[in-house]
Image 1: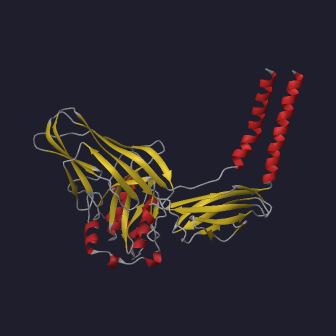
Image 2: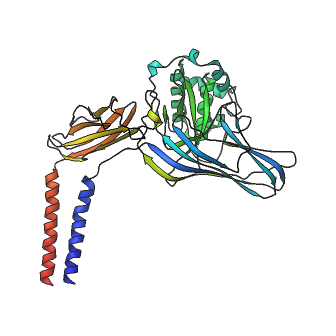
Length: 450
């Protein structure tokens, strides 16, 4: 009993003293920007009071594009045909026969998906004017639609104000993005007001942000399209979805603009594009589906839709960019050998950036830059190694500070943080050792007093 009590005291005292210290100083940090998932996208339709002899349901099919790879897709029920609309969106047509009153119908697709952070590395000085945008793109993606209200005096005036008199597509799009993001407050209320009302109320969800942004771009003669996507939420279920936009910026092509988030030129690894459209099409409405029924009956839908993410795993991130995007999934991870140093002007930490393809092939010929945010410490020049790693040595300053060290490559940036204070590694080890001795003394005292 006495021996057991002594052992318990040892354990409790040591854990209490040592664990916070070891947890605080033993971590290394890494950044990941690739997401692999198994996604199941579900629709539930419920018929009303009438029978429907034959119903056609059209749904947009996610495809490999830009920053995403979609494979092993299965649609249930099996489509009778696959189509492409005028916006080159792939569409599945599902036929439902003899739908009874009140009948519920489940439609879904399942797929393996890899999404990657992609940075388009836009250089404003290299962007070009409207004369470099193809005529067919201008014709298709600047026309008026019921949601855009381009003939409205309110929209015309807002478009003029938002552009700030700029003439080049890049600067028009950027100014319009800033205009919408600064004037509209995010509010998820389930309403879908027209854009005049959105401007008047100054609030809306991602749908309102995107549609208003696209309208003001089109009113300035700039091609813009609507993007519907799903986002990987923390709980793995997305019932909200997300909408953003793309604008044609010559010579780069279609560039993502997220008016809700206020950023552009980057595809996020947590977002999957479900469909892209310039407006309603022959098969789809402004969402990701459309339902038609023949004259023998009408189906009144009560829809519940959501995307479920499973088997999620983060991997080495994509290098992205238009310059190099090896195998569509290059690896980029950053860590430090120590994230806590003594502020003595000589303690150091090795910063390592690893670059590999998904097949594990090292990438050792990149221009990698490693820089300091504050510059109180020092950083050595970057060394490239055959195994795809790039290293630099950070040396702590003489005074305590919190330093952010950033690795830049092909337009992507990742950072690690290092804290420098007046406690050395030896002092921390000494503290742990003394704590252990104290624990032993306490245990011995308890033993002698028993």
